[in-house]
Amino acid sequence: MPSLLKKMLAPLEWVADKLGTSAEVERSPEEQARVDQACQHLALYQFRSCPFSIKVRREITRLNLKIEVRDAQLDPEHRRELKEGGGKVQVPCLRIANPDGPAQWMYESRDIIAWLRQRFGAETVA
Image (tube, one colour):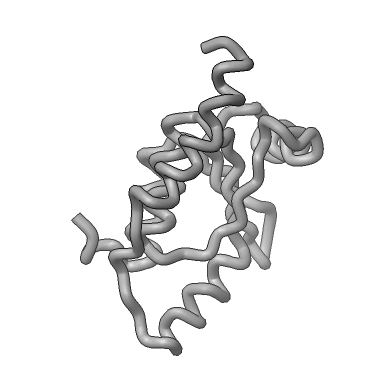
């Protein structure tokens, strides 16, 4: 897709992404606070218009997670972090900070979604 067309469609993709997905997992305030705390150790490296990144962002919304989203396409610093930490510039990539060791860099939307569902109780989500 030509670059100009991508730029023109980006706002529409953002609106569709936000309006097309709603949180499906509800937690008590205490449970949500624990989940929010755990999510502080996570960051999603993505490209705004990448269909696999969109898929992961929608799952994050469905699971009611507050995960920092880092644009590795438009932000050179995030792109550098992804390349240096994960070893390649491929998105989506979930960075999982480990307090006791090095960060884990998880690629592949299917693997990221499976991990998020397992970690944050998505068995309630179809």
